[in-house]
Amino acid sequence: MPLNPCELEIDLFCRGLRVPDHVSLEGARGIRRTRAGLGSGLELTIPTGSWLKPAIWMNAPVVEPFVQTSPYVLLGHPGAYEVLDQRTACEYVVDIPREPSWYRRLTSYEVPMSQVGVLQGTYLGIYINPVCEFWSTGLNCRFCTTGQNVGGVDAGSKRVEDVLETCWAAKEESNITFVHLNGGFQGGHALEFAAPFVRAIKEEVGLLVGVQLTPERDFTRYDRLIDLGVNHFSFCLELLDPEWFARVCPGKARTLGQELFFEAMEYCASRLPPGAVSGEIIAGIEPLANTIAAIERITSLGAFPTVCIFRPTLLSQMADWPSPSYDDMRRVMAEAYDACRRHRVPIGLAPNIEVSLVVNPDDAAFLAPRTLDFFAYEAWRRMLRLAARPVFLREMGTHVRKAHRHGASESQGTPSSRSGIAPAVPTAVAHMNGDSNARNR
Image (cartoon, rainbow, N blue to C red; front, side, top):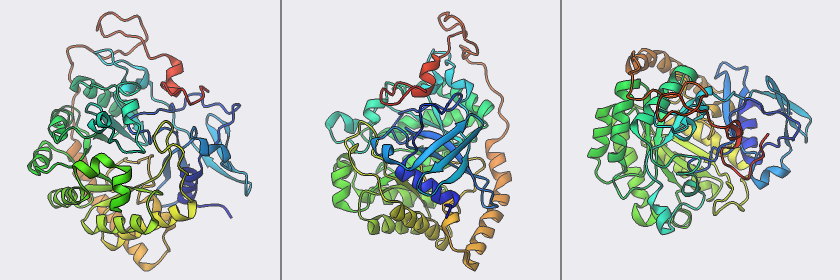
């Protein structure tokens, strides 16, 4: 029996997608190991044919060792792809979004825009601060590869000007509405580091802005960012069980502690509109009951759960761990949607924000039984989306692009010392972007 769109998404996250050498990925978004490495797969969309949402975005694992035994195989060619499940002979139509031309453009300071930020689904993700300090002490999270990526395929030091130019390119050419600024532990000063970026993006570009940084004990710093216009905060709790938390996230456990994540989450949820705060957890490492308990606690605070299916990313300290089972992950995602429904957490309200790295809570609506409570919740969400539309439009406003001291390169010419004419990033980099473990197709 064919899987529904969300079930297919979950199974692809768990098993991965094999891409034969003869299948062309010409024009596709490159396979990029940036930030923590979670987006190191192939971006694709799964059409749903449903009134719930037209398509599901995901970043399918393609290079990790566990993918070699996947029953899923990509077939077709640009503009006509499908995924074949060799167990059942079921075929699923998918689309592979094209790589935007601005990826190959340089900022006015001659930094490739793809090293400033990347699209992950329909939003722009930017790692804004230096590499997480836990990497310098060996206390980094064991699933993370930030210390290997930031400063390489992901520019380690980002100017506000570079970020603004990249945001404008993504807004004008990729129609983004949301930019997600994240970073690692900076000794309790990461929120201060974020402020100039938030101010500039809100004032000059007019995007919705999310911030994901380790929690800090001085909650007035959250107030300052809210005053600057931050629309969303997310907190990477990762794991609920204290022993698993200490084992997998030693820096967070020793320096911050789990309760600070919940306290900061609760505070920000009290200061922002419903649905503007999320708690991120990883499913597939600790016992399933703990993951479900974390979902319940997050939603009870008025936040929504961002549940990442554990991916044993290449070169991480957990690269040889097994990928989780489909049945367990399906249960977790169904619980995430149900918890949002029971606690009346609004999900999927903001325009054109589809996250490809996780199973979004509104993706999991496809897993829910069609009860009266289901239809009541979906009707409530639809009503809120309609009511929120003019609010978001007013929030984003009408902004005119300012001319900076040096114009970003718009063509592929010879560099002329910030003359505004600079070469594009080599085509070979467009797909693999420095990932020596991925094939250049």
